Length: 149
Ligand SMILES: [Zn+2]
Image (cartoon, rainbow, N blue to C red; front, side, top):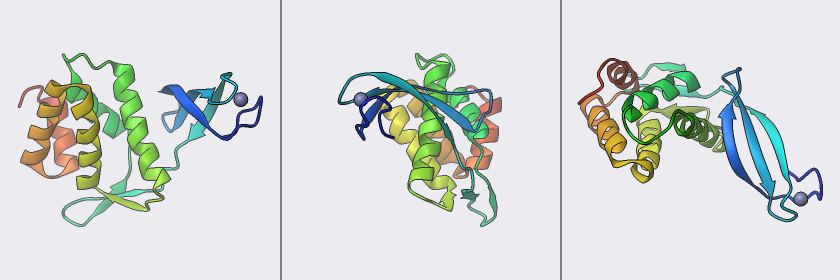
């Protein structure tokens, strides 16, 4: 993503949020050369398939991932915006790695890795549910209904 002002190739993301279209991410960027700020809209190509433990596939769902993480972050100091950013980052990572398929285990690990840095309560809650179910689908269903583990 080149800076529209000086054409420098590198910028840092200062803020990310999903627009009303859930597969679209709006990012505020700051040029690492001239320091000017600009906004980009990135579409997440959700052509990745999630491989479940039983060998079946389903479409990668940013919304499902987001709500699953949000359930673990309830009553922690992680804000909804941070949850949204986290889910978007994971979707971006899947996209940037060029993965056509991603396993539930990989997604779970990506979530844990990030939660660990953000909040220990959310991390433990997620890790506990994740380890118990070993399946992202069951996990997502479970953490949406149970707030404790
Ligand atoms: Zn610039």
